[in-house]
Image: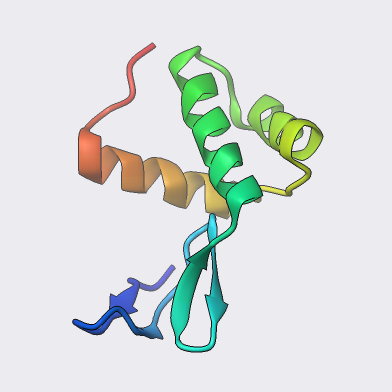
Length: 87
């Protein structure tokens, strides 16, 4: 996945749009159901759950499909920002 590129004024310049966001013109906007699925995924990782169960919960509870690459990118982002997720 390519690194997200943003201008100083918040315009999207390129890169992979993160799960939980979508492009609207040249701006990123939140996708609430996907952001809720991110919270669920992080909570479930803290509980020691694995990707297949997490993806099923995202689909069932939030109506969104979270691919393995999207999940891995989310976990990498959480790790970069907060460090390892501990059960």
